[in-house]
Image (cartoon, rainbow, N blue to C red; front, side, top):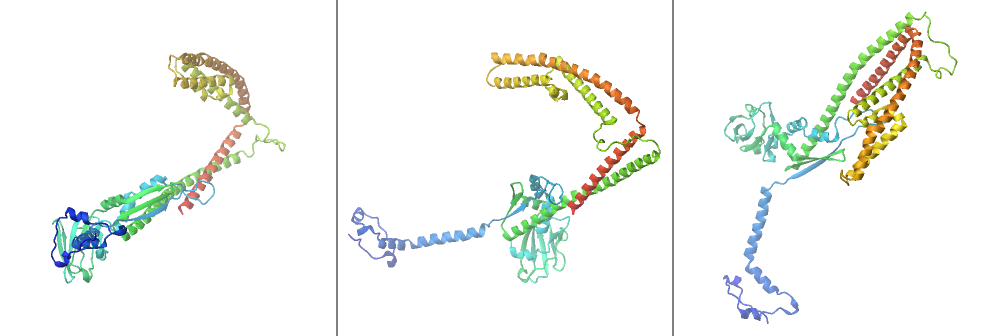
Amino acid sequence: MPIPQGPDPVTQGVLTSAPATAADLTTYTQPPGGAPDFTRVISSLRRFRWTILGLTLLGLGGGIAGTRVIKPNYSVQATIWIETPNKGKSGPIQGEELLESKAWVELLTTFKVLDPVVQRRKLYLDYAEKSDSTLFRAFDLTTRFLPGQFELSISKDGKSYRLVQRNGVYTEAGSLADSVGRQVGFRWAPRPTRAQWGRTVKFDIVTPREASGQLIKSLTTKLKEGNFLVLQLQDDNPEAAAATLNTLIQRYVDEAADQKRRKLTLLAAVLDTQVIDQAERLKSAEEALESFRVGTVTLPREDAPVAAGLQFTQPTVYSEYFKQRTVLDSLRRDQRDIEEVLKRNRAGEIAVDAFNTIGAIRQAPDLQKVLGELSTAEADLRTMLTKYTEEYDGVRRLRDRIQLLRTQTIPLYAEALVRQLQDRQNELSSRVSLSSRELQSIPVRSQNESRLKRAVDQADILYRSLEASRQQARLAEA
C-alpha cells in the first residue's frame, strides 16, 4: 500500500520526529517492479540538508587549509655521462683516466664542488616570500659574518631601515642609501620596491658549509652502468631547484676538467725536466763515442770483411761466450736451488713444492712425472678427507704413498738430476775457459767501443720515449 504523505516538517518550520512503530514497518511495501522510491530519498535529503552542507564545507575548508600549510616538494633530475678514455691505439690522444667510476660520485659530494655552488646560488640565505628575491639580489657575505635569524624593517617612505637579530643579540638602524649589516659581515645594499615599503622581511643566514651539508642531504646520486651518473635534487621551489642543479653540474664538470688539466700539466712539466736531462746524457754519450773513434781511427780494428749473406749466420766470439756463460750460470743456480730444497726436506720441512719453481726440473721428465703423481695424490687425499676420516684405510694408504713420494722417490730423482747438472757444468766450464782466452786476445778498444755504442743506443731510446710521452701529455692537456 502507498505510504501516507503528511505535511512536510521542513516547510512547516518545525522538525518533529517520532519512533517508528511495528505497524508502520509492516505496512511499507516495495513499489512494483523493485524501483526505488525517490520520494523517500528526496525527503531524507531535505531533512539532513544542513548536515550534508556543513560536512561538505568542512571538507572543502580542510583541503584548502591543507594546501596552504603543506608545501609541495618538487624533484629535478639530470644525467651526466662520464667518458672512459680510449685505451686502444686508435683515436685521439687523451690523458689517462683521472678517477675510477665510483670515485666520480665522491668528487661530486666534496666541498670543493659544493661550496662554490652554495656561494653562487646563495643557498646559505633563506626567506619566506618569493617576492622578496629582488631585495636579496645583491646580497653577499664577507669572510667573517654572523649567522642567525634576522628581520629587516623598511620604513614607510622607503628611506631607512632597522636590522634586528631575532634573538636580540644585534640591532642596527640607518639609511637605505648605505650598506646594511656591515657589522655582522653582510655586503648588502637593498633597493626595495614601493610595494616593500613599510614591510618587515624575515630571513635566515647559515654558514656556507652547513648549506653544503643540506645540499648533500637533498641530493641523490646513482651510478648506472659505470658511465651514467644520475642526479636528483628535491626542493619546494622548482625553478630554484633546476637552477641549483644546473649550477652544480656546471661546477662539477669544471672541477673535473680542472683536476684533469692540473694532472696533465704536472705530468708535462715533469716530462720536460726529464727530457732535458736525458738530452744532456745522450749528448755526453755521443761525444764520448765520437772521441773514442777519433782517437782509434788509425789503429787496426777487429772488423774483418765477411762475405755477403754470412754476417748474421756465423756466431761471433762474443755471442758464443755469453751464451755459454749464461747457460753455466743457470745450471749452477738450478743445482744450488735443488740442493737447498733437498736440505730443507731432510730437516723435516715440507718443501717439495719448491721444485716446481726451478727451471731444470721442467727439463727432467722423470722428476716431473713423479711431482705430478704427488700433486694427484694430494688432490685425491683432499677429496677423500671430505668423505672419510683419518682412520679410513684408503686415507692411510694414500698418506703413506704421499710420504714415500716426498721422502724417498722425489729426493732420489732430484739427486740424480743434481749429478747430471754437475756433469754438464764441468763440460761447459772447459768451453767457457776456452772462450775466455779467445776474448782476452781481442783488443780492449773493441769492448770499449761496444760499451759506448750501447750507452748511446740506450740514451737515444730513452730520450725518444720521453719526448713522445711529453708530446702526448701536451696534446692531452690542450
